[in-house]
Every structure is written in structure tokens, then in C-alpha cells.
Image 1 (cartoon, one colour):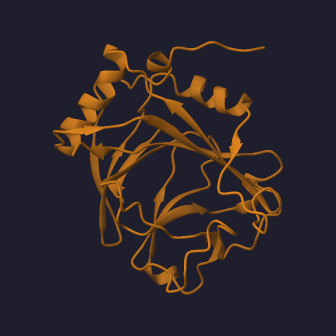
Image 2 (tube, one colour; image 1 turned 30 degrees about the vertical axis):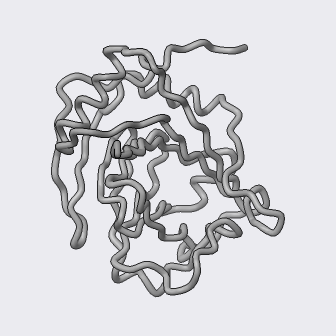
Length: 219
């Protein structure tokens, strides 16, 4: 049965959010707990949704070794106060004056065949965006986001296989821990990738889920 929702209401942020500056390794990031007012409803929506493949390729491993999926929720063009509250908050927090955001992007993932612990996710950079703004929305919370001090020296192969052996990076890898409904913000130029502490917890129809805001500067 379809469930109707108002996007600006479902994704409304809480009032009186507290921004904490934290450090992990050499990096500083921002952490904001209890970000959404309706986090349980957002979690329920993703839990019941059909989600589309991401980075699929005839020789790729997506839908063979894992399910890596995305959905894109278009932000409305209407001037809703609840929606503006999110971007007014981000503008004040990050001291931004002139930016826009077109969608709320989800990242929804589970293993078909869980790998060994040294296998994680390809470190990448978001060079087109000044900040990486993500909110953890699953209740398993085994892991978080790894920040790396260097990128892999081999060409990016994520479209074929997002799995990456981090054995040579463990001394220069720093994990931001995931907590349900926590927003974290860090420099998108830092090499980063998802990190799972116990791969078995994200298999057998148990999914890792977060959403991301990509802010772009108006030219």
C-alpha cells in the first residue's frame, strides 16, 4: 500500500540542534545528534522501499556480491519553512552564503556474500562539493565512515567492484562512528569511504542506510 508523505515534513530537522566539533586522526569534523524530527519514519520508508541499482556494469559485482543502491528525493521548488530551516541551519553552521541543493540522496547497501574484514569500500573524494554532509539512518551502526590520509595508487575501479583491500591503509585510516540519526560533516576532498566493522551484520536482508546532501556553490 502506498504511503503518501510531504518531503519537507518528513525530512524536517530538529530544533535547537547542537553542533560538536570532533577530531579523528588528523581530521576535524562536525557531529550533530538527533538531526531529523522523524528519523524513525524515514528509516521505515527506506526499509519498505524499492531502491535502484547504483554503478551497474556488465562485468561488475553489484547485484552479484552485494547490493549497492541509491534513491534521489527531489527537493521541492516551493518555499516551505520546514525545508528552508535545514539550509538556513547548514548555511549558518558552515558559513555559506551562496549555494543550492537539488536532491536528498540515499545510500542503501547490503552484502550478498560478506567478505573478510580487510575488505572495505573504495576510498574516494567528492571534489565537486566542498562538504560531505551525511546522516546515518540504519539502527545496526556497525562501523561508520573511514577517512584516509591517502588515496589508492591504482586507478579507481569502483564501477566494476567497490570492494577494496585496506590492509595497506589501516595505520592511516580513521573511522567516524555511525549513530542512528547523527549528521556528520567533513571536507569532501578527504579520501573517504564507508566502513563496516562486522560485515555479517549487513547481510541477510539487513541494510546499511544513510542520506547525503550535496551542496553546490552558485556560480
